[in-house]
Image (cartoon, rainbow, N blue to C red; front, top):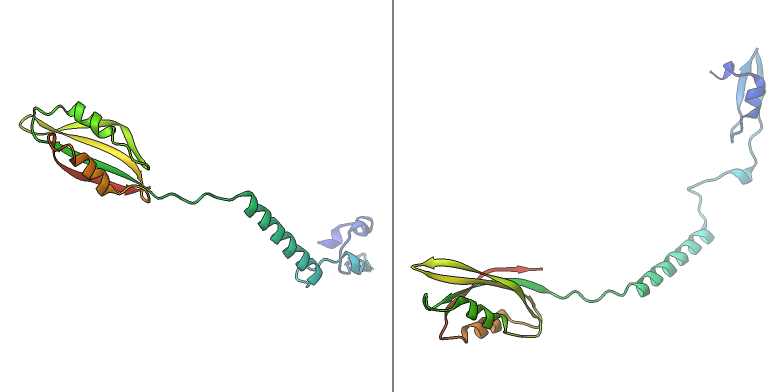
Length: 162
């Protein structure tokens, strides 16, 4: 294949090895390139490695100081079923009392649902997000059960970690 190119074109080729081409029964040889132009990716360079490691450390330290993350706060989503004593209980007023419960780390959802149970009695489905380190689910449940005249029982419908 090399023999198809003219000696003028072959003279423009550069490379690290001696190029030998057979043109009209002549051998044309190119001298090897200078040793400074050689690049050996597997050669050991202790000075360059030390400089690269130092640069990587500096970059890591700068990134750590720039990005100081706040600790992750463990949170949970809890949905309660609040069952009243009877059909005469005003569920809207009861839901307003429940939403008025205020604790540090307790965030009520803005809406609640009324679902029928039986014989005209309905229950309230209400949810909240709590910070696990600040609020105990038992404390919230006891606060809702404190409305003894209106609340018969309360159950946790779902409990999910965020």
